Image 1 (cartoon, rainbow over the protein chains, first blue to last red):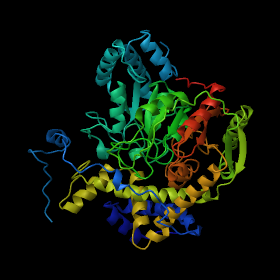
Image 2: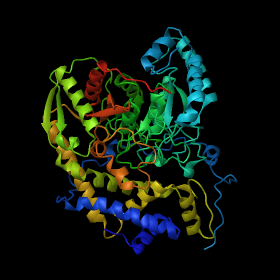
Image 3: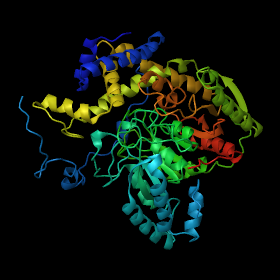
Image 4: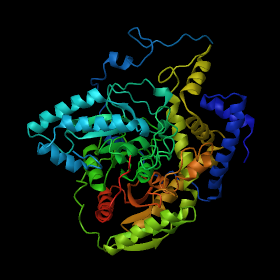
Length: 94
Length: 482
């Protein structure tokens, strides 16, 4: 199945990605081949039964919701580009 | 001391008998890394100072008679496993400067044993690939032929062990990322049952499939390492509350009467003849030891690649949405909030990661969700059912690990479909959450390793380790010439 430019633009929007004109042509071809491969699954004729998964988290096993010591703030902020005792994000004007 | 393919247990004896100190052993590996890794590129970060300091601390434990299995043993760790204070890049520009403020649970467990961290091993970017050529920093080469790939995504870990730049390593496996590089590099790697090992601190790719596991020189060393890292973890809600047996307990026990299934779809025309022959020769070797070979079928394998990629990419698209340049990762530029995020992700992610995010969002998007994602979940249920039927008759399943031996670097560039279909032998194990081990079963005419996989029932790592070990006892591995 060929993928059209409109679909790729929609996927880029959902994915928060973009390509230049040349990149767009390339990724359109690649995604077309990949989706052809994924389309093989359409010939499988069983439906998903969400009652049969049995992989849900058992909430009885979760830990108690009690406060405990966490990471030191300075250590968490060490990866931030700009800090002033808190996390500074770049100024953006919409 | 000759470190060529040195086993953890041999190093343990040497340390305990004071034939070598922990610092000397660490120094020997660091020397080898310094000499060899400029050609191999298996490490992204070598933690020389920390390693020597770890070794000093380990020696104190040894001298005090408090050594455990991994005290003073140097290891490599895949660069998607968080190490407190040590850069963890996931081989991505996105995390080029990320220094985790905490340790993954597996690292805490290794620390408790007094292990020595040699460094962080290269991998495909965010574990997406089977060649380690999507790494932004170290495109690892195969120690048996530097013009070939080491496999992936844990290619750095496997290559480091094969080249004796570490006696063992940790990798992670989402669709074959421990077993396939172990196969390409002629070492042994086990993907434990989903839930056996905590994923806390493993940078997420596909959360329902990811699992950390050991890569080592043989099944026995894998068992030793698995003993150290397994167990329930309250930080990971998907880690299982199950008993953790001694994984070395069944090693050396005869495999007489063990039923080994051979599903015919794993031996199709898509698999190279040399691989099929080598795996079948190994099957007959196991038969000579008393195992019973059982022919069977797994029709769902036909759909395994799309099912795997739809599930894995859908989860990846969600997991990687956190990398926005604001909260996490490389920060780009932009006049608006939206532009800043797009620019950060465009520059931070490589091409393969972007393709998988696009595919994941395609599978999850309105109008396609039922046709793709839910259909993939239906396939997951079918594959689990088919495995369950086979395990009703047999103890383990034997398959090739990869359709081919290691291929030339560049051979799969620009062909994602070829790259994806090469995962056919490994992905169903992740889809069904089963344990699988790959060990070397032969070599091509050119001396490239060929791997076979032994798949087990959920939480029955002991039996696949026993089976792999039984084969290894009669097999002579050949170390690469570097």
